[in-house]
Length: 243
Image (cartoon, rainbow, N blue to C red; front, side):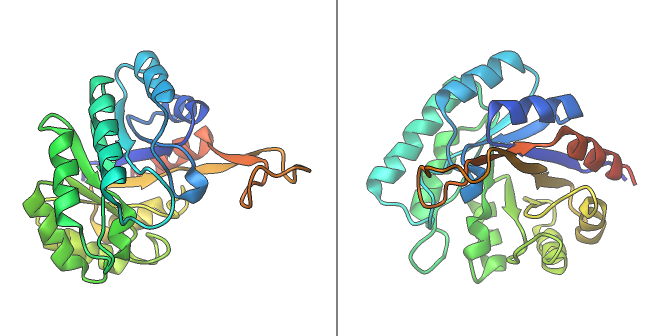
């Protein structure tokens, strides 16, 4: 069986360096991993594209933390970001939008997918895990032209969602890629791949870095630390995919 593709989620430049050093061929580029990831800066994208010309870069487009219900201004912001990142050499985008009922916002999602263009791969992000009727949503995303879905199978971690992830993969019938993500680590990656039959898998392999317990916090959630991809964990994960 062909080894599953590993996508490494990177929230800063050093994490990208570590992922590439470890052998990663594709990354999801973002910022603010502590809140599930937000749109990265243009400066980060420019440097990564320049220094790693052969690296596949999928850019997360998420303008703020919180829910995935976006107003017109936020939608325009995402569309503008996609246009700029396309010109900067992005290979793909990670997008998504929901309604107040946690169903796919078809109008907004369609606009986002169309903005990505035919030359870029499109992933619907883990907003999918907020959707109660995932099989119907899967069929909707196939119809909209989405290439893959990043999901934990509706559970807190992909390991907990393996049974549902397998059902999604079987239902997809190769028309869309089901990419497990959330809580993926070197110890469970082989089990998740073998039990879900997935061809791609996603993880950050990150750990806290920086000073903990700064005297002056920059916000309610500030710990003085940030998440940094561990290259040894990426290397181990890649080795464990060769089962």
